[in-house]
Length: 277
Image (cartoon, rainbow, N blue to C red; front, side, top):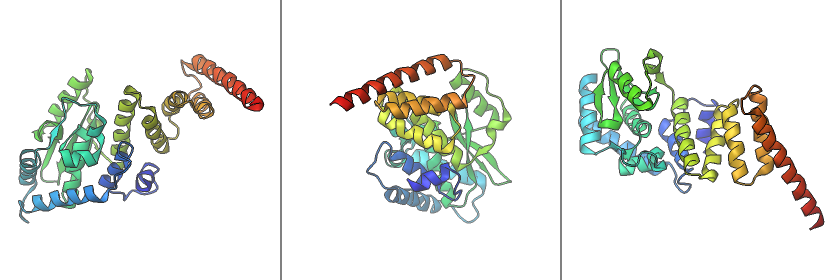
């Protein structure tokens, strides 16, 4: 997982997105290694290249890539089981060919990267697109809905319908770096694992997020709660104290302080028990 950590901590910016995403997937699938799935992406890029020519322009590339990835290979968005953690795991996505918007975007971006095509991720609230822009031709692709081509207005409209509020800030259409894409993938898994009460995996995700955002009070608070569920009370106390340091005006300050006092009482009782056992 070192490549992922290097990317999250900004020690390296040359970490390939596919490798980092596959290391994220080891939270759900600890036994996997990246190489076999990187080779699958390599094979996709080779097959797509055989459908292109040296003179293929941007518009034709988008058309051919869409036909190959979504019609021929059958990649699609998992609308029926959207919150399944498998949808965020690149190993599953490249083999089952189904996923959520950001994981499908990673597949598209990584195939394009192998072919030296300028494709980047576009992170809107609630949805993720890819953008092709070679200076002569520009297009947005909705990879979750069959690779359909959309314009800027349609990007905003779709995002607005998902988050139930108006999305129209043009800064959302700025391409995001690999670091931001991986953090968003981790945030998706954080929500899923907390919803499923899978606290062991939630702890792993939150620990990685804190490497990327070490001043995130929210992550410290959530990891503190997770540590309580895992009965790691000393670590929970430390996380909650970090939260209060980072968020001195937190509205839940009294509740968190009370929780710390409860942890202290439990730790004192445990020490007494251990002393006389």
